[in-house]
Image (tube, rainbow, N blue to C red; front, side):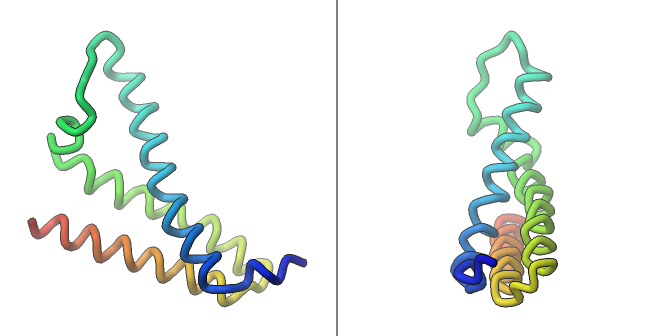
Length: 99
């Protein structure tokens, strides 16, 4: 169908862009529901309680959606790119947890 999507670059780009977008969207929804009256600095919230690490870890689960979509369409090279981007996030989380 769309064989031009069956390459490493498409998988890596989708795998690197989708999790931070979902993480920021989830954080925005969470903060709007819990902090309705206060103006809060986003950087202080992320530093507090190591929330950034948890958001990054949970947002990597979103990579399952493009992985299984590529797998179902038999775009094996693109699904390998999604897995590679997930490993990049794993390395980032491991580095941030050791700081």
